[in-house]
Image 1 (tube, rainbow, N blue to C red):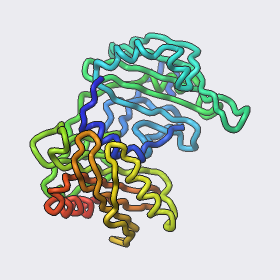
Image 2 (image 1 turned 120 degrees about the vertical axis):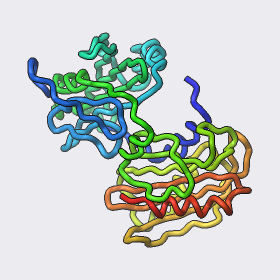
Image 3 (image 1 turned 180 degrees about the vertical axis):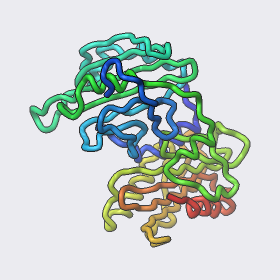
Length: 323
């Protein structure tokens, strides 16, 4: 499946925010499905499972169980069902015990894999129980991944939750932006293009939604619910986050500083770099706001020749974000 250059850049900008992821009785009346913010896939959650703030999906309040959702284009279903062989899944850590084709209550088709994922550390630890559920819809493909530690949730409860899946109509871009865990109160002339993962948004300025060679500036804003590093490690943390972007090279930091603003700790970097796909000189602005339960990160990229006009606008957007 081809991925646009814009998508690749946006995903790369957010790569350091990726998070590792760890019912109704028969005959009961179906409850209304619960949809994670911005997601088209809703479920009847198992007991103690709540919408996660760390990823698109659900997690058990006491830990030990997760259900995560990835949305792909509709044509992906055919490719995935062909490529998800037992051997391929085993190479990814999932030992398949069973697979079954299901017809869901609303007529959609699904392919459910059930198995285990061994835990290497500590030695002898019981394996994770794991489910991979591919769901087909004319407008979207869903990859639903459930996993539990032994005794965290019963296999029956997890299966019931997974197969309760419902798919709602596509959300408008405005609806997806409204579901983000933060608000942009001043867009400074930029417009949203895409929401990623329910916790991040891509903005640009210009008529194109898909761009080659950074014809338009890009600004990505994302919230990560992960522990923030202590104050003495934040400069190194920010630089590592900047360097993790593999679509750019030859970084030269012009400014790297920490500051206090509106009662919060911030860190900002401005650096020169080279866009790898196009060889274009660019300027990168990265701003991180550290919060008690995580951090917010904004990364803007603009052609070097346009820096004077665009960098102040990046900062205006970042300063306007409300949590």
